[in-house]
Image 1: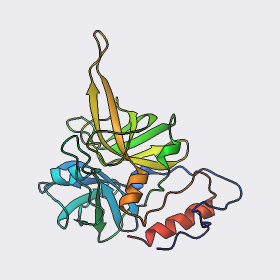
Image 2: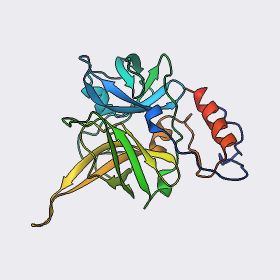
Image 3: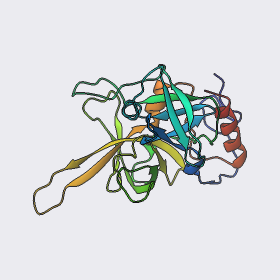
Image 4: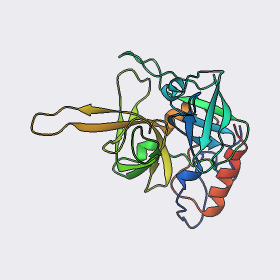
Length: 247
């Protein structure tokens, strides 16, 4: 698969003046729906007709590899049926032994959104992030979670390291949502889960969230590209043209 125009052999854009054009996650994010139309989690567009979410979200929606699952874009009111791809499927870990990365790719019949620009999570430590998803049980149907990126950590059961992020605003229903590095303006991960860590009283429990790193998504789907931080508008447009042509 050829890379986007304007990239050198190492995959780094050769650009002049670097500018930042913030990504609009609302144009990329979608709800993953079960058979009754209830939201099982989030997902987001990574190429022209290719979306990604968590495998456990797909399973919560009652689907699996080779089966259909319904989605609804954040900015589009009508659901559409997608197909869960066997290629790139990596199951949700069930124990301590590394067994998967909790990733599922979806093939869409038509694109109603804009793919995100993926970036390198290993360069995001200490940066602020934004994530968008659909929490269970809240009075508001969607939520912007924010905080700071920690770094990559090895979590029992996962084949690849996860990106640790602040989790105070992460709840059930945000799984599968993109994690946007606000400094690099790249989606560097996908929310996959959280844990509440007990501490010695009177300190309250600490919620820590985790995200599948963008590098893991590329490992499972090699046609995806990770875009370096510096770019000008022409380079970004070349990147987006490239991912719109790929599935």
